[in-house]
Amino acid sequence: MVQRLIPPKAPNLPIGPVAYEQRYQDQFTNVLRLYFNQLDNVFGSLLNPGYSGALLQFPSASFQDNTTQVASVTYPSPMSYTQIDYQNQFTLADHTATFTGSRALTTLTTSSVSGYIYVGMHIIGTGWSTATYTASITDNVMNVTAVSSGTIAVGDYIVDGSGLATGARISQKLTGTGGTGTYEINVPDGSTISLSSTTINSYGIYITDQLTGTAGGAGTYSTSTSGTVASGTVTGRTTSKITAQVDGTYNFQWSGQFQNLNNASQDVYVWLRVNGVDLPGSTGQIGLLQRKSAGVPNKIIAAWNYLVPMNAGDYIELFWLVSSTDVTMSTYPKSTSPAYPATASLISTVSFVSALYT
Image: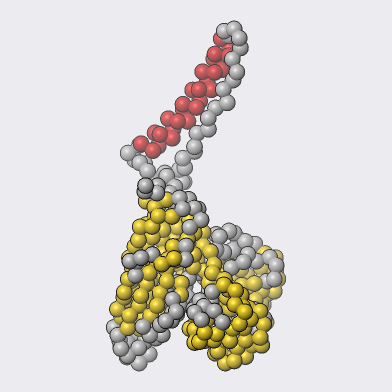
């Protein structure tokens, strides 16, 4: 059983009579006694050596991504998350862009761009869905009862036209393996959603690089799959902003699982942005050895932390570049022999250190 601190509430003291009255004095004393008992309970729990600060709930959160992520050699892009492990006074938020787009094979041509198009953004719009199915959702568990087209994948953004929260994504496969079955759903603000049986579209196609044009604007981009899509209004979405709800100084720590399929050593550059602005001096450089053999990558996990002052509403992101597009941040499935759990491509945690320094 979890023990919690219950904040004491200041008592509503009774108004005294003009003349002394023992009944009033007894009532007044009793109200104060109850209030002091509350204070004793709170401070006793805080100062008890057996508990100390163990009962305090500081702002903190943990996020991970369960997809393989790609980056560009020239256009910085944010690392993204599919899953909230836990959160207290933190949420996730999306980058979005809207534009007119058409596709021929793997080339996306864009115009009339509002926002910034990032490498890694999933593309949502008519003709871009990767699966269509019938499903209901209960407390963030989606039960797929029939699939009319495509394959359901972790990381897909899902849209039903009305009831689903904006930015909802598939974070884990439960009993489903791409078809009927159950899947866990993540919503960036951490809310719990339920939805009656309806038709849902999954969107798993994402941008792998910018080919021409102004960075993040009109031009051409490569996509993760090939096909033909007529020109239409499209939304790009990526979930990358870790947003604070409480002022404070925070320890932000991350780890990424990188792999290199190139036959030469390669580099990865990772840095922090706060409210969309690069944090000076925050870039870390990661070196990866050449692949072990054709099709067998060299792998490395990298991790470090930052102390970051944040006001309520501020957000932090990890951005990255690679020296070759053969470098990815990858996820691996669980193993049964020998037994170990799946590998997340990215894990980030943020924890309260203190009030803002002055």
